[in-house]
Image (cartoon, rainbow, N blue to C red; front, side):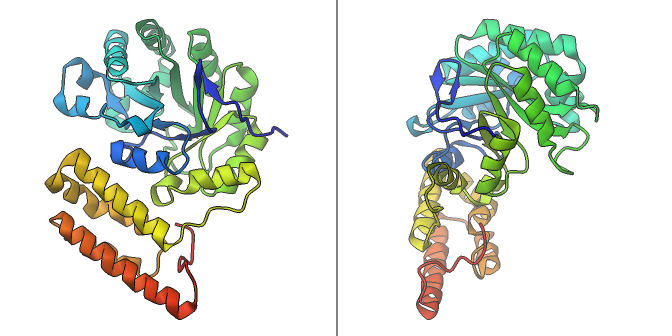
Length: 343
């Protein structure tokens, strides 16, 4: 049974804790990364970024490289299928302040696969190798790849691709043990993470079906991976990272009380406005704030109210009303924390 690695590093870069935020399109932007970094995440990553968009100087794409000092170390994930364009994109990301470049071998969206990118690289071995080599030669910062278990159900793709990546100079491999066809359905096969970990000498990051803090330690112990990558579970519970650290240290799990919960949400609102401006931030918050209210009593009523916000004042008024409502419930139940289920 493997103990938790307290000396997790990617290349020469030391990562404070063996927890990594999975890159997620439309979610892991700068405000979200700031929020989870402050709650114990060891390494945060950008949304997946089009190498072609960077190569062709798209202002919107370049905006996705924006990050704050508190997000460091900062990994940038790029996707594409053309070695020269991927190499140039990696250079541009490094110039913009990326500490790590990550190559996406896992996206199973049809329009991405059609171009040969994402999980499409897992069935085009020679091009996959060419992409990795081109990016490795283009940058002098650590390089990682995020892969799936394979294109089909054989389960052999992951080990082969991971070995190729290591041979080409990759510094760590993240494994999501579902096939491209599965996308996010079915159960993640942690045995594939274990097989990759046995086959490599570089760090392996396990991903898939970590829903509770206890799952993270279970994955490390069962698979021998060096760190865990968490995606969807962190959307509604950004405290999962500090809770994992609590388990590692043998402490009681952090249970965010009302003050912690709402101060975190208000901080996120401020960061959203800082990043996007008031109008665009409000449009985004109509859906995003609902993530952070999940699991709270009467949340559906307030999530519905948030869908109609048009200005920051609306957000603050709704949050103040909701916090006061929950404080009243606390007084009624003689509790400081009315949260009745996991966020």
